[in-house]
Length: 165
Image 1 (cartoon, rainbow, N blue to C red):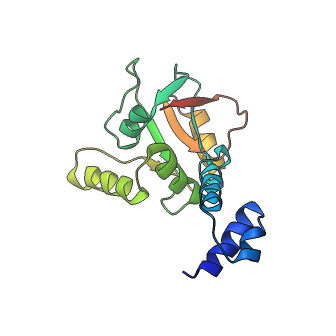
Image 2: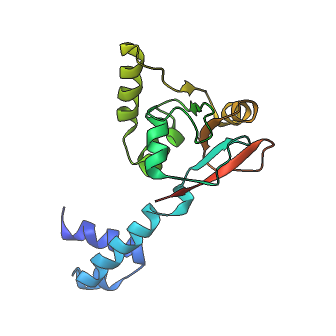
């Protein structure tokens, strides 16, 4: 990539015109651009909310617990009740964001785990639903259920779960 293309990028990121005038890229500008990019990338605006049926007596889950639930290795809550997992289709942008940002695994890895369980006869994968509205409706109706939405809004019989690192 030529320095002139980078100059345009950094000018765009932080509005600096000194790079354009001097045709020189300053390390301060590189670090500034990377920092701003990191802030944008890790922004909570990109987060996905985890929701459960009101019957689930939890306020928070760790990322590790959530990964166990979505890999279908944990099939019961602490009180012994069954966990019903609902997911959006693998190609859905919210599912991909949930997998990468919350579970910290790629969507194809989840698909492989679920397929292996199903085809080996050792278990079943989650229930796939077409959209968030259907997912919320099923979570509200199904005791012990869990799912995720782009942005949680108050729904009867559904509660938001905090995810601890």
